[in-house]
Image (cartoon, rainbow, N blue to C red; front, top):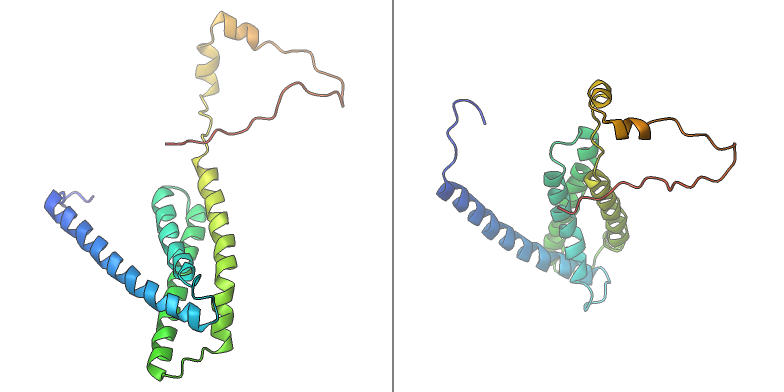
Length: 188
């Protein structure tokens, strides 16, 4: 917040939030109807066509959540969710526009290229969203806290100092009794 900006009042924030929810619900319903219809026109089984808009518009929602969750991380980490958000938005917008053109044209025939895009989206989104989930899990892993070496050695207790004594090394190629360290995941 800048020095001169006053904090927003709760009623203003709640009005903005409520308006966003209403607009999002309306946009989702209209997009859902258009994308479901386009999926049927593109050859998807009518009983399964409702899944296609969830895949396309779900990518937008999942990417947005990831962007919020990864706030504060380096730009390189945020690049992928932003790319997915842009991709999902372009596909959803283009598909809604194609549906409108076909619905007004009255022909009802979907060009083969549109049918191919409709058919290709589910596996492409599956791959993309799986990778996004991997990024979220990796970034939620607990990182060990490193203490400065000077403070650490000065603050050592006698028992810790004894533990820090060098241990005999094993012969090269001998099996190790220690398991590799696995980072813990933060559930919160």
